[in-house]
Image 1 (cartoon, rainbow, N blue to C red):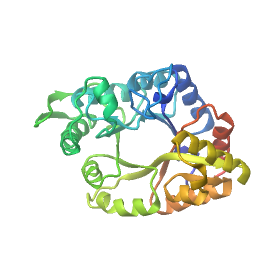
Image 2 (cartoon, one colour):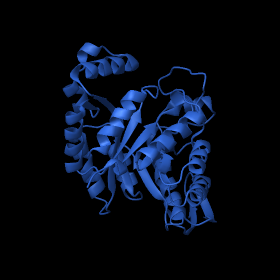
Image 3 (spheres, one colour):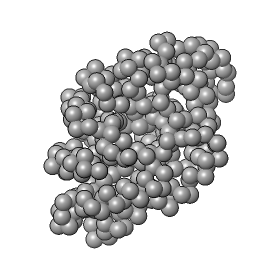
Length: 309
């Protein structure tokens, strides 16, 4: 049966969170019964708006979360291929997974935000190259996070190593994120879970065959924004705030139009109905994106609604 344990909070610390804030949300999520606390792996605000708190580095903060929690699963959603050598990243993952007693859910993808690449001196190659890099990196990371040795030489990466410590559960849970058919085809060969970002049921149906063609049993998860309120009037206020954040005209947005775009929107009963529709379509995990961390009342409403499932 679907419950809050199948859900997680998804943080976007690059938009202005301190390490203490991240740990606070992780502690809240664990106390509240969530199964997951995930965070983005970005180095600059993706909104383009500078913030005084900076963008706390992802893997450093995951270590801090692991030290301050006991049960909740943790991970990046997702780490891009262009920043860290895959063999080293696999070693980081095995270390954190061992330290957290098998709680790491390791999201890995092709990367997309060109500005932060260039700002930090990373090359941002064309998407065709990044997909080739992703294929090679998955081969290395999957092998090492299964506790096996790899001897591999590719066009972009090589590895001749075995990682220690070994994952305590025999493997690190690997997540691939993407809506590009070629990305989905690539990740489906290697990962345990396919995560789709804020997409409609139609988009999910369009992409599922690429996953199914791999002949592997993958968990399917959804990550995205949620606009939840306890009344139609409060919901309209949420929509107006969302429109302001995105820089669009609120008059062009309705609960129905937002839901069709993959943003789960509505009062509590409508929210649950939309969740159930996605569960029926094959999604078994949800990571709810926290775009307004100061909205404690809204986050508590989300938690209370999920607890009643």
